[in-house]
Image 1 (cartoon, chains in turn orange, cyan):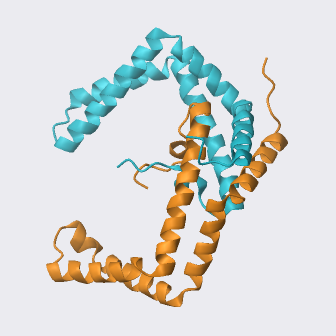
Image 2 (cartoon, chains in turn orange, blue):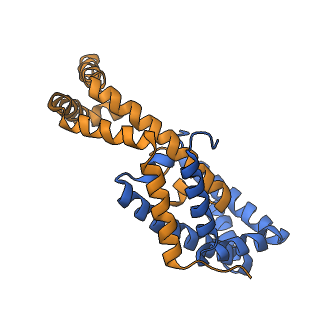
Image 3 (cartoon, helix red, strand yellow):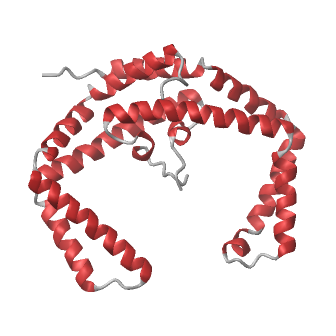
Amino acid sequence: MKKTVTPETTKRAVHDFVLALSETQQYKAFERASERFKMDLAAQKAKQAFEQKQRSLRLPLMLREASDEQRAALEVLRNAFIHIPSVLEYSKAQSELEVLCQTAGDSLSDSIGLDYAASCGVSCCG
Amino acid sequence: MESAMTSELQQATQALKDSLLASEAFLRYTKARARLDADFEALGLLDRLSKAQARVRQRQASGSLTQSDLDALRELQKMAHEQPVVMEYAESQQEAADFLRAINEEISELLGIDFASYAKHATC
């Protein structure tokens, strides 16, 4: 009969997993990029402007009633935001960390017989 | 694809897997799944239920859903509830998922990101 683990054993396995993940170059790069992005006031301002515009156009866009001018204005703000160096760096670091987490997640899912992300309530559409 | 992971992360992932599989929740789930896989009748019922659910969703979206469709689904749901192998599988799966959510909460709190969100594959 297989022996069950104690909660302490599982806690230790979780901590060791987090430690190993946080020591990877992908996680460290993400931490550095997050910090730079947070401290970049111009990037934060551009993000705010883009998100504000996006919020104001959510309904017209959903109902396909947004004018060409409105769409163009949103696109201008979006491009101004995503091409800022600290934003580019953050996006790149985030994507690379996602690939690593997906690899670890797939490895877990394959063994346990459940999709890790789906079981945690995360849908494929975010 | 293990190549993206450092050897330390591979080892830690393996240890976490082993720990999850040896937990009460997953031992129960693994056992229930094995029983389900060995029960042809229960598997058939689950398959019919899954198809009925998909049919209802599809007809609801197209506006062609009938009372007969709903009755057929309810009948299959009732049969599933009365099938011990199916119920044990469903309950143990829910328990295992709840356990995983708790594990994910702990991982995410320590990492500062929602690990499950980062681990999901976007397929839409």
